[in-house]
Every structure is written in C-alpha cells, then in structure tokens.
Length: 88
Image (cartoon, rainbow, N blue to C red; front, side, top):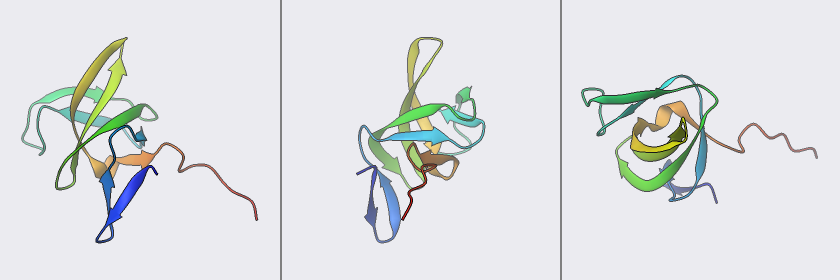
C-alpha cells in the first residue's frame, strides 16, 4: 500500500514513493519558517521515510546523484501511481 488511512488522512509509509506536483521546497524541518534546503522540480519523485509532523512529511530524493533528506508539505505530493487509469 502506498499510504494508510488514519481518520481519513493519508499518512506516510516508509518507502512509499510520491511524485512532486509542483516545484517543492524541501526544508530542514516541518513548517514554512524552516530553512529551505533546495527546490525539488515538478514531476520528480520522492520517497517517504515514514516520519510525519502534521501535514509535513520527511522525504528523501536524489538531486544530481546526491541523496537529500528533508521535510515537505504533503499537499504538494501525489502517489507515484496516482496518474494510472484503470479500465472497467
């Protein structure tokens, strides 16, 4: 499963992959006041570590071959398989 439901809210599952919906600020901690580490481009993939602070999820991604870990707003993430269309 990509994410579990808890009281109707998606929660990050360690190892689950997500697609960045729009340019994403990867931060040193949860919250818009935290230091911005870098901007992850739209369409990039990130992997959840399983840690969460409200709507902020800790994720890791590779940028220029270097693995970076930081915090991102879950509102800007989509499950990596979300765009798939299934026929009936």
